[in-house]
Amino acid sequence: MRPASLELLVVALTIVTVSHLVYSVRYRAWVLAFGNMLTVGLLVRGAAERALLAGVVLSGYAMLSAMQRGLVRTRALVAAYGAVLVGVLWVVRANQFTDASSQTAQHLPLMPVVGLSYLLFRIGHMLIDAAQGALAPVRFLDYVNYTCAFYTFVAGPIQRWGEYHAHAMAETDRARVDVRAGLDRMVDGCLKALVLAPLVAPFADVAYVLGGEAPSSLLVRFAIWWYAWYVFLYLDFSGFIDIMAGLSILVGKPVPENFNRPWLARNLVEFWQRWHITLSQWLRDYVFAPVCLTLARAGLGGGWITLSLAYFVTFAVAGIWHGPTVSFMRFGVLHGLGLVAVQLGTVVLARLPSTWRARYRESWLVRAGAIGLCQTYVAFTILVFAHRPDDLAAVMTAVKEVLS
Amino acid sequence: MNPEVHLQVQALLRRVVADPSLEVGAATRAADVEGWTSLAHIQLMVGIEQHYGIRFSLAEVNAPADVGELVALVARKAGLPSG
Image (cartoon, rainbow over all chains, first blue to last red; front, side, top):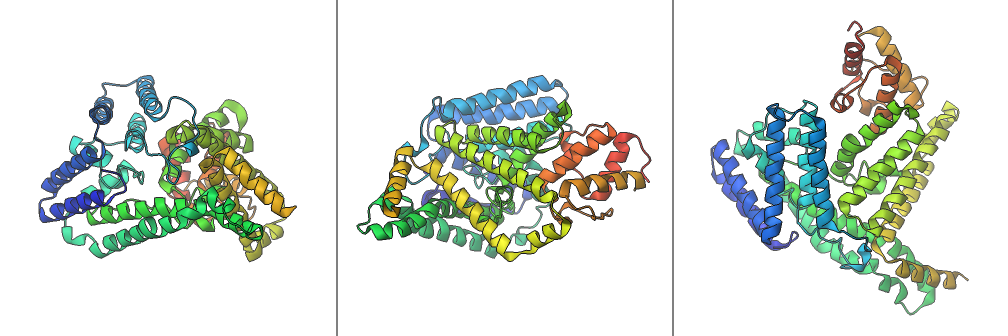
């Protein structure tokens, strides 16, 4: 069963329906656990893959329990276990640098082991919180339902344990589930991912730019192509998330939002507060903040040098998580540079007179210009990620010929 | 709320968000202040650590919901009176 498929939708809706037929909150948890295992089993077919996922889930709980019972006290041991998990992710993702754009053209490459990378985020933050004494004891059934929830297993959102558990504890009445809201969200998601995204996809292909007969229209096609991959990615990804978010509403465990109108972002800092929000928040809290704190404490202070180094480390981690390929490296470097530029801009802005700063913040012209620049840059970084350098060079050569 | 800690936190926050006229109270949240992003928050916490010679855990960095809770946390860790 493919992650984005009608079969998954049918299985998911069946789980939702059956769970609503069960009155007892406790038995409903067991129904969800069975449904979650069934979904994972249908998504992950290979015996080795299933064994790997089971090993990660079970060892994660074993480590968590050991920490909470005081059997594991040294952070070094927890860090070593974390390093093993990261190593597992590295091995199953890719063990050599390849160009992601040489793989299947229209979509991001599927993970070799479906769900593993998102699973590591969920388990990872529980371990980090437990190491800091910020996690109450976790029941195994709740842990399984959280880490293997059918509506977040494939592509998130990366819901934190605390929020998930709060919904589970508040679950007393099935009638409180907003069925209409859940279904509306799913319909929105289907419209985006299954109708609009395929319509946009052809415009993202290099063949669209280079294939036209009239050179005069090449610039128009170039402009459309420049943004098409960004638009396609947004519709495809956010649409899938909308479907899963709708399902989470139907089971009474709504997930956090993952997208907040990224097209309104004025700079890259704001962009990452609006795009794949749960991922950027996780990286902010568990990678960026600790790196900043460590560097600042080491004597570099809390200024733009510390922030810049922290950005690069964070995007390196994000790159490894996506897959250690050249494409992701390029994407990460471009976003790291862009974020550093935003920080330098903030430093410059801080030195301007307060009236100038107020005028800058309130000017709709400045806002429109900033949004245009940010969106164009983001679209560029996605192009660099999605296309082979040869294809990009061919497009730029064709554009130069028209302009000259 | 410890007034001295409150004023110090306010001074650091003014520097971080580049607003010398900023006034914050106990109930002020990050969402109420222009420029108090998560990034600015980390800079603020680093500044507080350096000023008071204290050290926050990762959980404590993200825990305070408003200025009042932040001031109380700083006072507690620095061994200062809470109010």
